[in-house]
Image (cartoon, rainbow, N blue to C red):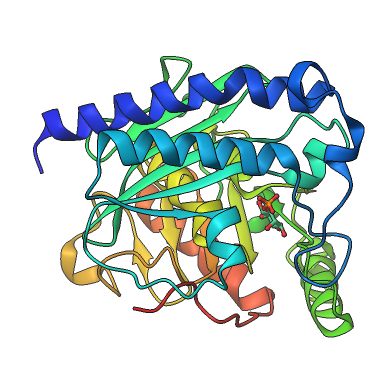
Length: 328
Ligand code: LIP
């Protein structure tokens, strides 16, 4: 795939995100075509009221898919609303596949909490290659394509640059973004909160003594915060491919790295050290770590420090297995 093709796909994703921005804002503020508040009654998807879908989710996904079908009739489409409703039973192929979350952070959206946005990713040969996340209420448009860098509102990521951007060597120098998720079974809640407790607890009691733990309410805002340099790490088990697809491209292109539950991935990590190949965005687990500069005096290269932080995190948290998305 040429750089020109990638640029064209990126331009399409940006255009579509901007096109549905006004509907997103109307929905968020319950205005215009979404002034009817019954459109926001929580419809649960998991058998509990914590996993919502709204009329705006459906409208935005339908609009984006209709345009994509028009422009690229041969491309495959995977979207949170249509795919989740048909039971996630789609087949993952090497074909260009657009992966869309019309409203990521839906619970935030319902509660007027601004960390919510539209996510449009494109995978080719199962690898995520284009990512656009638009957070309309924060007025932040994140864009990235493989090999072409990552940007927020045209400013290159990471936004926070060295020397302000430090080179942490342990979790006790890090901020982590994570989520409590919408799977509210007692077992899952105990597991997640147990992991949070151990991460935060002082080292003298065997914990990681993490500096900050923040829950924004969405994988997309979480990944953009790490890409920007406002948090060192994002860890979560349970989200779906539409929550990750665009965000991982933005994160990787900002110099970050990703562990997908089985292997390690970063744009300049040698091929033989990447396991599995390609990065598995359908695996429903992720650790993302921000760009760490190579600085003289650091106990290792930026890439080594990234691995060290992820290793420390994975030794503390409890892994939760979910059935992967799609059928490989
Ligand atoms: C959300 C994810 C988040 C996860 C939530 C939910 P949604 O996506 O962004 O990471 O913890 O359970 O899946 O449903 O708001 O698009």
